Image (cartoon, rainbow, N blue to C red; front, side, top):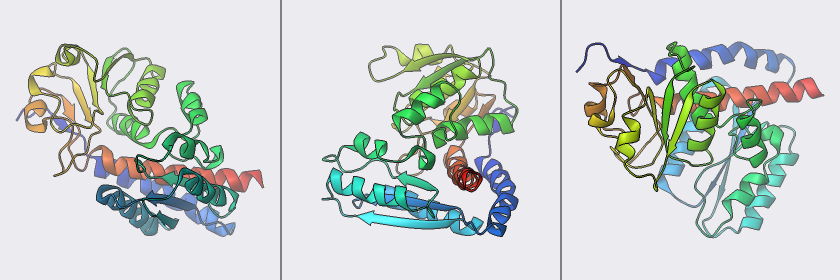
Length: 283
């Protein structure tokens, strides 16, 4: 292992973020408001169920109310949207999270669009994406925001750097590319149709792996001294980066687990508190 490599501790960053929320939650409590996050789980995907449970537990530990809506896999898009509209109309609910992915027969985009902008704490609506692209989003997508939060916590410079993002999903690859661009990085986006991905990654000062394939990024793709942000999570606690091979080349790298994941959850909690404060200020 290269002794110069910094292991970017997501647990530490997440703990600091959550500590900073406690006084804000107490202030809301004095005004009779408990921040509330509603999570919606459709079907019985075990990974999704685990994610929802983790988010609920994180809320409970911090004093955020959590509502868990579970719907069977045969739920129609219309039925899902009806549940979302109920949560939109409930003034005690400040954030709504629809766990991705929904069953394939459903129109996930239509369901995302049904979430009211003031409660879109994961930045999944097209309007939220557009605001993120312009750098004015109240609630940018949580995983992209977590990646930047880790880099900021470790004072990793972004301006003037060449970032290569592997993946173009609307809730990870695309928004993190926009956020890096807004921070004056030069951004290259690679995807399944990009030839010679390794050659592109070799040019990167910052690598963001968001492709959903275990150990996809190889050690010989990493330029010496590059920053490696692994946003992947695959069965067996494996990221999208071949961690052991990449860390000997990188100057800093996120592990999986205990890297981007904990900060993603902390960001979701922060956005829920932000939304509750916005609700109080608008009354």
